[in-house]
Amino acid sequence: MHEMGIATSILASADAALEQSPGARLLTVKLRIGEWAGVDASSLRFCFDALAKGTKGEGARLDIETPEQSDALEIDYFELEEP
Amino acid sequence: MSAVVYEPIAKKVLSENDRVAARLREQFREQGVLTLNLISSPGAGKTALLERTLELWPPGGRVGVLTGDIQTDNDARRLAAFGYPVKQICSGGACHLDARMVEQALEGWDLSDFDVLFLENVGNLVCPTSYDLGEEAKVVVLSVTEGDDKPLKYPGIFHKAELMLLNKIDLLPYVPFRVDAAEANARSVHADIDIIQTSALTGAGLPAWFDWLGARRRTQS
Image (cartoon, rainbow over all chains, first blue to last red; front, side, top):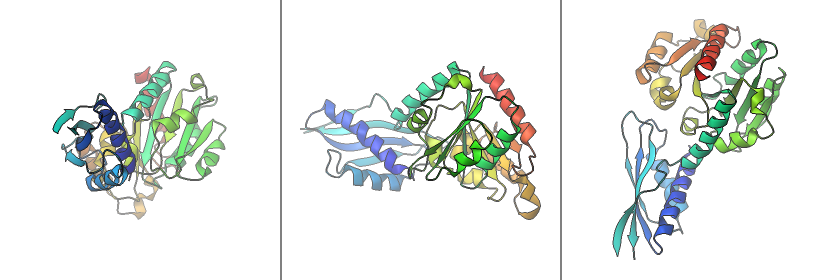
């Protein structure tokens, strides 16, 4: 239900990463989202894709790990393609 | 072209919210305010329980409520009837309160005026779980008109809550709710969760709730 907010936060964090590498493109976001985090992965992908359109994050893939009995909601790393 | 890996400094997705929440928590602790984040599905009786709580609060009590809803200030008007400071937060469509909303709502309030501050979240068992509001503890309200398997369906909040208030127990004769099963389900996701049975209508369990609040204030200070 709040996946739009989560996606917005992920993109803001990605922007900070992209500023470190001018001209780079976002390839992958590796996320850890525990089964108790209350975040639906397919809904998050949908929101992320919609928000990323027209930005440097467009086309990036969310690689989501789902630890059991955990409420983790973390960005593990971003994979960027540098020119 | 080459691929590089970049690790963000703040790994938590909601790190901005967490930053504000940490600031709030520090202020609450400095002023000795026990702040509780009340979470339940819509209609479990959070507002009714708070009405009873304010009604029974010892005279001269230092208590306040921030109450969150998507729309209307109905809850704030209900709660203001008891004469304590109450402020409505309209989340404007958002399904949860976040730390920034709480910080803004507290502007103009002197935290040293309070012993206990209740944050009544938007009725929702999922989204509020992710957003730290700087509270000392989360309290989940489950009512007997819901399913007794709710702790299994929404383990996140039952895992994080220190206390479960099992509300509307006056209705137990009329509903098929199994109290034992509900308590066992809650303990299966959170072995140490405290559980108090309450009825906002009859006042049953309110003394135990006040005892819990008193004990929790002593552990905090």
